[in-house]
Image (tube, rainbow, N blue to C red; front, side):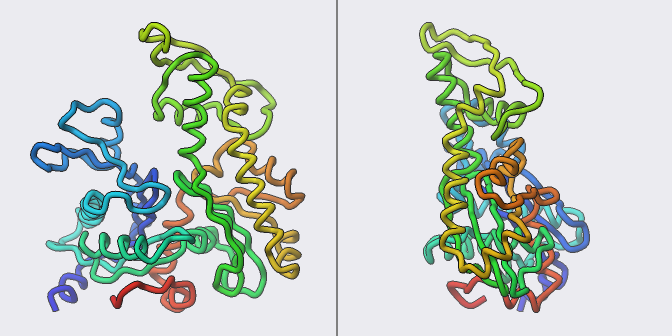
Length: 347
C-alpha cells in the first residue's frame, strides 16, 4: 500500500547498469545521471564516502582503510551490497529535485544476453532493495536497438554490435526477439589492459588503467589514421622504480589493441554464419549498427565494414543507446510487453 502511495510521487526510471558507467533516464528530463560505476567505502566504519565521479577520482590513490570498488564485472554484479548502495544513491539523486520523501519508482534496467538466472535475480533484488517498487529487465542489445530507433518489431533483421566496458554483445534481432547472438567478455576494459601490457613490455614502464583509458580515447584507433597522433604519458620505470615520461603514438596503440579488435570482428563473422539466410540478406541491405562506448574507437566501423563486406554505421550518441531504449519503453507499455526478459520472480 505504501509502495503505491510513494510510487505516485516517484519518477519511473530507465537504468543502464554498466561495467564502467551507470546512466539513469527519467521521462520528463531524459538522461539525468551519467557517472562511473565506482563506490568508495571506508572499511573501518562501512561508510560510503563517494559514488560515481568523485569515487572514480580515488581509484588507485586510496589509503589502506578506503576502498574504491567497481561492483560490476563483465556486465554482471560482483558485489551485491555495494551495487545496491550505488543504485540507491543514483535513484535518490534522480529524485533530488522532486518532493518524494521515499522514492519507489518503476525501473527498467538493462541486462547482458547470456546472464544466468542467479545473476538476473541479483540485478532484480539489488534494484528492489535500492528502492524500486517494480523491476523490468530488458536485454541490452534490444534496448540499444530501440534507443537507436531501429524497427525491432518488424519481420526484417537488425544487427547490433554493442561494445561496452566489460562485454561486447553481437545480436541479430527480428520480430521483437533476438534470433542469434554472441556475448564476449572482451570490450573497452580489455583494450585498456592491452595498452597497460604493451607499455610494460615495450617501454619497461608501469601505467594505471585510467592512464590507459586516456591513451585509448585520445589517440586510439582500429585502423590507420590520415594524420598520425601522439601523446606524452607518465608512469613508473620498472628498472629503477622512479617516475618517467615517454611519448607514444597511434600506430603503437593500434598494435597494442589490434588482437582484441580482431577477435570482436571474427565473432561478428561467426554470428553472421549462424544467422538464417533470409535475415543475412536483410543485414546486407540495411547494414550493422555499432553502439556502446567501444563504437567511438576511431576507424572501428571502417575495419568492420572491410572485414564483413557489409555497411557499418555508428549509432547517434552510442554511449547512451541502452538507457534511451529503456526510456522509450517507459512510455510504450505495448512494446515493453513484447521485448521484456522474463522475471525470476513476480513483481
